[in-house]
Length: 109
Image 1 (cartoon, rainbow, N blue to C red):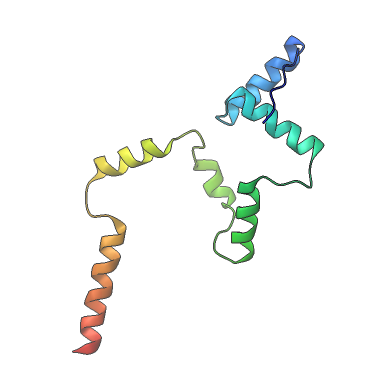
Image 2: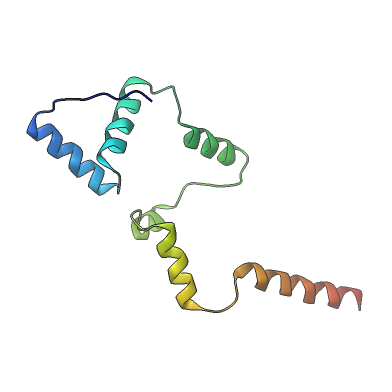
């Protein structure tokens, strides 16, 4: 990427800082996202392209309005992992494997 230095009016900088804060982004990320939307609406980021492909395949779908209202976009992956570690218990994958094993044993016996 190329570096670009901008001189912004204070009010515009304040708006940009608010937008970045609301979305849990760094100032540079917020500015880049705004420029991308304004200057290259047809150009999609790699993430947007992947999301679009997965949605078209039916593998993911957008959050419902109810989930969007309770979701915290500022939480990090590490914070989620720490919360799961505090909760204890088996990982969901192990529970599913056990249930499948039990079901398989019932079917074959």
